[in-house]
Image 1 (cartoon, rainbow, N blue to C red):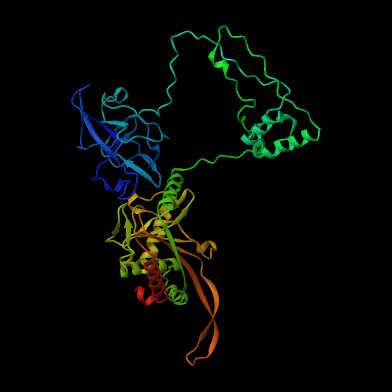
Image 2 (image 1 turned 90 degrees about the horizontal axis):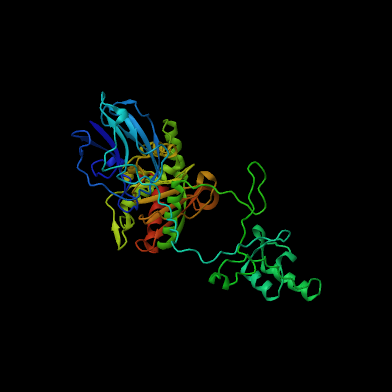
Length: 489
């Protein structure tokens, strides 16, 4: 009996789901079992599954945890699959011996439905196990097909352009090329001042001025002698441009200071590529509107100090999450999303909290935040933030959500605007709290200066579903709830 690991799609295995309604990438990692009736006979899958074909954009790479010939037990970790936002462990579903690894460790862009390994029962000859005929290793990335050589004999020999020794070659801008050709000038008579050694329009105009003052004469590059073709060639009837297109830019030497005009390419992780794609789509397709309000944190800070005395540690951000959830419950018209055709009111209040990690920004979700207490929200935020930084978030812990909160106050930012995370309709950007002197009146009506702790919050809203008037009323209610923590109980 042999078992195989495959990448497939099965709605019954929800904990490995890598898609969510409204998201673009849907995939699943599962173990499909099969056996052969006799050597060379057909294979039958243990689970009746219709496999989802095509590229899985969320799959980054495969990291194997065991070796060929090693005995494995049910529940043992066979490999780790790194997606765009988490690392998912694939466990063995039965005892046996790892007979073959079809997809090597570190492989990327594995197609769904591809066979990645084989397991046989103990006692079977695992060294000579064969891959089933109906499956095989995933096809390699297709390369551009090379043109087949023509069976007809060539009638001409192309002329190879050679650089004349001692002649400087420049990368010319289109405008500079036209000016030099018009005035019969050579770029080698001047100096290139453009970025990365480009001979610019200004450099060409400088040469024209020198020619007009008589300091230089006309000079055209001497063409290299053409090789004598064995037969007339129609390709030689068209003369090439006087100056070739851009040359190879200078290259830096490892361990040495960068050469002038060079740069260092930084490979982008899957997470950053997904973030870049989604942010670009959001700013280019979602009409953002912004509303800002100042909130007084005096009452929140007092409640927080009282909780510290009881050894209950919560942050200001936990109160903000709770206040946003309570406000969404009071105003369900804001707890909506855009499904492509119109607004869709959501039956749940799940708050996405932005967490900065080394790989990019992740948004773990506080489920049913309106029904949770402040301490429960604080514990959830701490646990999910740690999992996000360790790359251990499960898909259901970061996909979905009805409202997002991004807090940069701990980085000293006074206020900012955030980009909406589609298909959500709103995101709240929170700055730091700061002391401000305000003129108030006491009980007797006497004016006095009093210090207040204020924060500035800015809500970005999708104007298609949350217009300016609705966003303004939401911020007014949010401010009232946050400034009166008794409402959050």
